[in-house]
Image 1: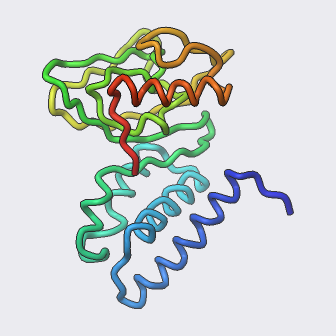
Image 2: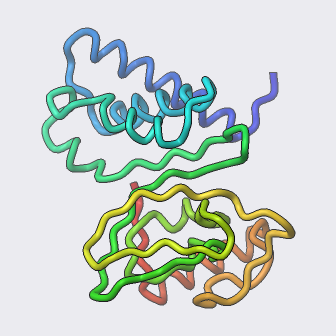
Length: 194
């Protein structure tokens, strides 16, 4: 059996989630990796079962309660992003916050990785994605507002130029991506790791 790196990751998540499920059933409180694996595996299985993005977003928030995890774990997971392949393409569901003092609008075809630096989200996970909104429309983020959005993989020839000058080239080129990550850190774009 030959597994791709992505399939290996999913298998590892599944194993960790089953361990977490067993521990939860025994009345043990889950630690951070167990809680993340538990929720992630449930969302991935929901994708496989054909559930919608909005259904999974709602369900994911109810899978564990604060009493199910060790002290401090709930605060360590302010957001959780899961990328999955739906019948209509790959999507990434995320929660964002506008940390700036002015409203920000992001257009439908903007490479979301390069969106305004005052938006707080996991930029590395958003690399190669755009908002899932109708062409020519935009999403507005008010100052201090947290908002859920759905991202979809950029199609076509997958080349990005401009916006904030972080990416200038083929999105699938590892060298272009590495330079973009370095530029994002150097230029003060928020890099949130979970």
